[in-house]
Length: 232
Image 1 (tube, rainbow, N blue to C red):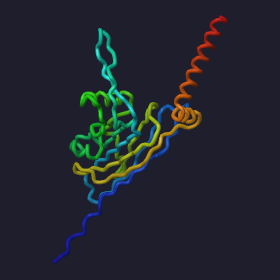
Image 2 (image 1 turned 45 degrees about the vertical axis):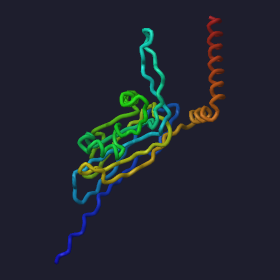
Image 3 (image 1 turned 90 degrees about the vertical axis):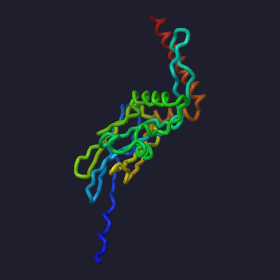
Image 4 (image 1 turned 45 degrees about the horizontal axis):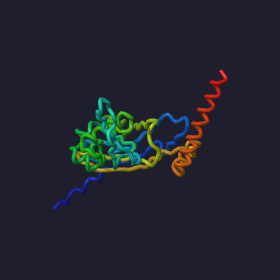
């Protein structure tokens, strides 16, 4: 009796970043990094690659505008938890064609998978995501991953000026037949350098002293401007 053929080797996924450390200084105007890698599949099945870039979690809140006495005013702020400062999902095609929503959510892919806790329900959640998207901090980019050659892929990640500093996580997932079959992760660090780092550290470690310095600088600037106008 002939033996069974040996099982096919498993699919392999390799991925890396062109730059794993971004420095923010006075001349920072945004940055761009590339995520690149390769897919090795002896069976050559159709594959999709998804890149998820998630920034550090930040304390934030959202308020709904309410009409009071004929004026539009912000209502009571609602605290949002579980919100990353930056979140980008780039994919080789539209996510709905890669996998079903439950599978994407379990894999942490897409804005719908964000573990946001927003008082007020789905309406507040969607409003918060829209606000972040307008700031360029949340995005989905179908077609953002290009297969440049057989099995070789590349994705460009643009980081806006307002991107928060801290530790980021870059996840690269390989999907086949609607399921994630391989995953690779890389760390990305965005940090302030030079004078900006000193000021930021001072503001975080001694917030009251930092506030007093800001007030004194504002008073000095106001006095200097007033004196200059008196001489005119």
